[in-house]
Length: 145
Image (cartoon, rainbow, N blue to C red; front, top):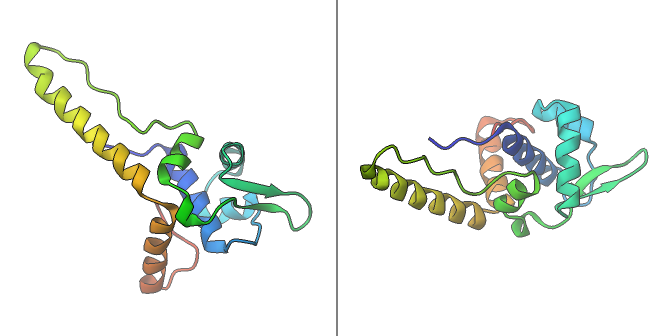
């Protein structure tokens, strides 16, 4: 029913990659793109949006790249989505007849609940989920959102 856009998925993957890399170490966009299977030109646009929103900081030079601007506990998933131009609410279906008010009411409630969940969920919450999966699957830096 609800789907995340490719842009949303890639932005979450990039932010999770940065959180897994650690706070002080900058990671190049190319490295993130390779690890996460994201087209590099598309990722650079996403990283630019995340930088403009103050979620990541960029560093130039040979050891340059990106790192999180704040600890993962202070970054909400809703902020990530808004930074890359995604909406937190879903459009209501248009009523076809008078009885469709039930569908519209349900859709409004679902949309509100999704918005609340995205605002309460932090990057740290997802980070710990990924770390748990990596520990059980013995995977290194490969995850799918």
